[in-house]
Image (cartoon, rainbow, N blue to C red; front, side, top):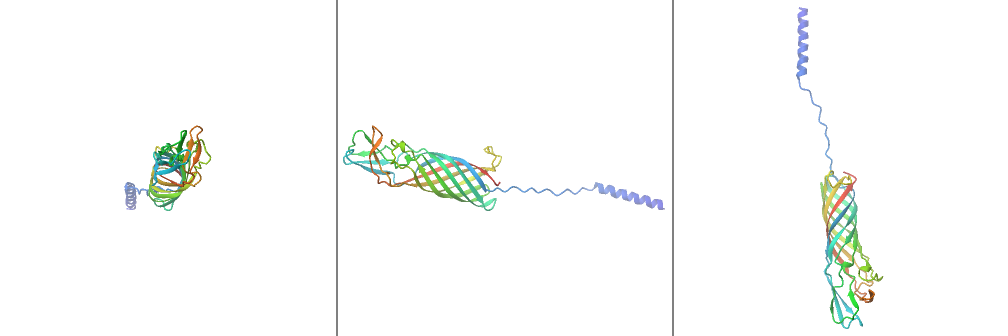
Length: 274
């Protein structure tokens, strides 16, 4: 009897072990890998290219030609051909308060080449003009070779899309010798302000455009209005001696704002936070 009970107990134990082996094993809990949340925080640099055009309301200026170069003669200068290519580079830094979506503040500086129309000797002359002289007005936008800005930016990010406004300091200058003989009186440097806005989109990190292995490559479309205020030193129209390309008379009363707009596309490489 004891042998039978021992055999029955052993059989029961073996059966229970076999049944436990057939039960499904409890799988380990899955490892949670958080998805990185994109942030616009970080420094960046990039390039841009676009189109610039005159945005002033006064596109015509006049000049009474003094004797002996004119006799009751008036010249009218039109701001024709004041448009062309603009291109350059920018650097900046953004800070986003909440990753993903949220307010973004930043600062950006850029320097731009300008290719405005270069014909400023398109005066309409009413009355006689002495032989051997011509007229020019260096106040026009075509005297600008480059401009730059230092701006603040304020925007809102919808994940990888940033919509922003921007504004700040602007400056510009041109080559004096592009109008006539490098005359020192042609003070071409000017300062002013700019305002605008745009939107920017961050491409995936593995974008084929990511040549510098940056944390993000962004593309943007931006528009700026630029107003550069000229001072009054020798800013009027000039009578130029064609033989030596030197001014023989000028009107130094001619304060004028240079106003133009720029529409451009850009590419940025962002470094820092992902």
